[in-house]
Every structure is written in C-alpha cells, then in structure tokens.
Image 1 (cartoon, helix red, strand yellow):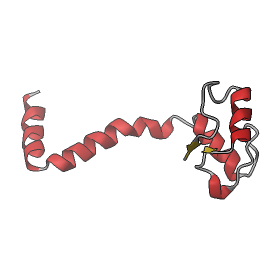
Image 2 (spheres, one colour; image 1 turned 45 degrees about the horizontal axis):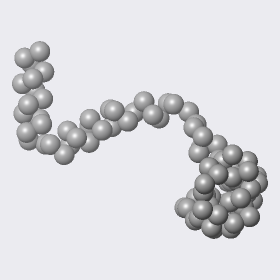
Image 3 (tube, helix red, strand yellow; image 1 turned 180 degrees about the vertical axis):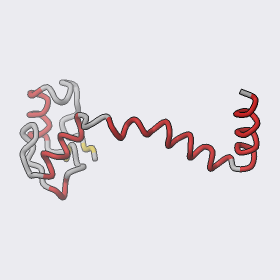
Image 4 (cartoon, helix red, strand yellow; image 1 turned 180 degrees about the horizontal axis):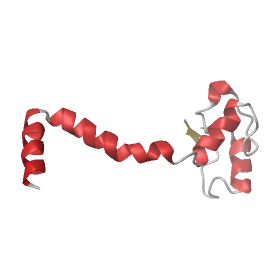
Length: 93
C-alpha cells in the first residue's frame, strides 16, 4: 500500500490534469460495453428514416425531438411519450 501511495502522490502532484483524465477514462470505460439504450434506438430509426412514434424523421432532423407542431405534440401526448401537461407548441432539440 505504501508503494502505491508513494507512486500516485508524486504523479498526482506533478500532473493533476493527466491524472483526472486517466481517472475519468477508467470510470467511463464500462459504458463502452453496455450496448444501446432508449435514445440510441430512436436515433437508429431516425437515421434509417423510419417514422418514430408518429413523427416522420429524416437524417437532417435526427436531434430535433419536438419541432413545435401542436398536432405532432398532441399525438405524442396521446401515445404516452409526452406527459399530458406538456405545452402543445413546445420545441426541443
């Protein structure tokens, strides 16, 4: 334990930013192997130009989630994607 303490204390003091980058990389590494999550599937569908939840998506608006169209937003509320209390003309990207 003393050897690890002695090695890391000098490294941390001499290169604090490099140490933070190394720790961040080690902590984030498991997420590389977790697979896809909900929004990843939505982006894949949008990339292949499949309609997602009654919204016709194209590659150019892949990160536009709510475009301010009240009819589209009302349909999303009816489908249960948006809460019932959502403002009908809301925009989100």
